[in-house]
Image (cartoon, rainbow, N blue to C red; front, side, top):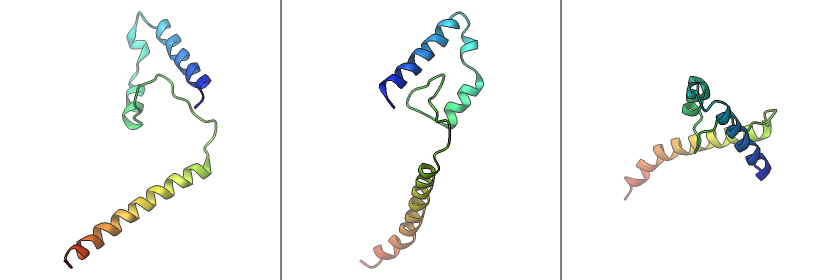
Length: 87
């Protein structure tokens, strides 16, 4: 993410806070809470940067990594006890 993009989102959040500084209930909604719970980040923001489209190659790589890790974990949990019994 470029510095300009980070500055834009920072200023956008600041503007939203300034508009609603008198009534905090307008600022945070239950949908913000649920989004933060199910897609946690290091810091909470009112708006998150998003792409206009889904990058299919990137998504396939991440799905492949998840499947690969799951297979490796299953393999080691099955084979490792058999190897340790040999010693």
